[in-house]
Length: 143
Image (cartoon, rainbow, N blue to C red; front, side, top):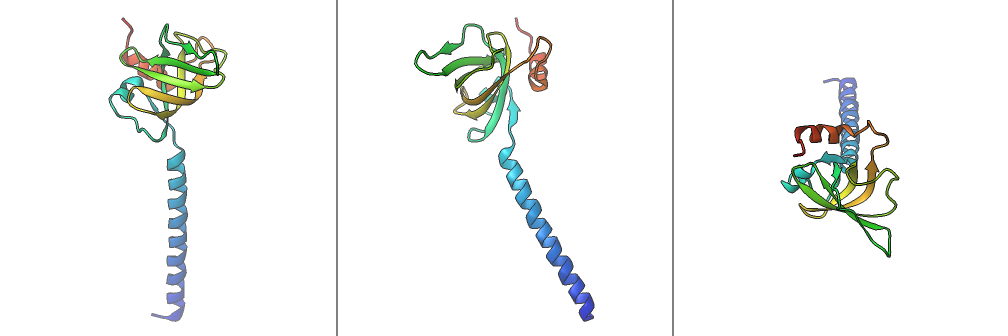
């Protein structure tokens, strides 16, 4: 093998290894920032991870909103008309947040029944519902 050919192969191997390391670092960083969507039924079934940021969506159950008198803490229940989970949130809720409203809460799962939200999103007009919530709720019809 000629010295020129050895040099070209070494440059190629070095370049490929640098690109592989860069791609691995990018994929690792993206994996940590992904926030997947789950329904209450999936959460209760144990399909959702407990130490990662996730999104849980459904309808706010009627009569489930409990506001703290001393702080901005709110506890409410999200249902997909099959299963229900309890969500705790500390902060200012969106203006459109109310019972019977479609919401998506982002945060961490404490156990299969309790979720601590870091952000709560509510639909912004009468016709809009997040696609994930709409798909999940279309499978379940309230009785």
